[in-house]
Length: 84
Image 1: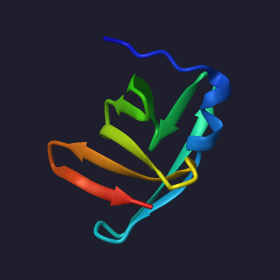
Image 2: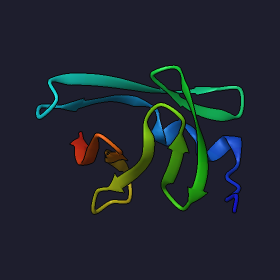
Image 3: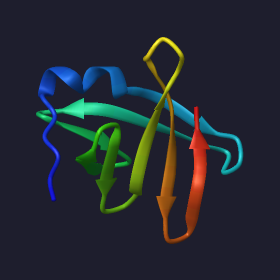
Image 4: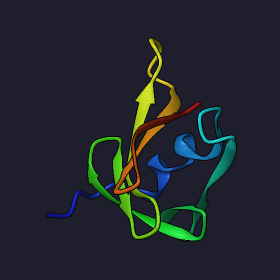
């Protein structure tokens, strides 16, 4: 099942996100009509949730104002790892 999101809705997800647990920073960027992280294209599957081959499921978290503030990463080797 594919969830559609407009290109205009993608820029708020872009930015640098850090995980102290993994001691790594990922950059999420908009390329063409997609989000990209670690050279992996993210495909929307739900509101604020994307899947990429390398990174698995990425669920963005919004703050009380509705701005994208963080994401959690879920893949085989890492579950619920928070990047903020």
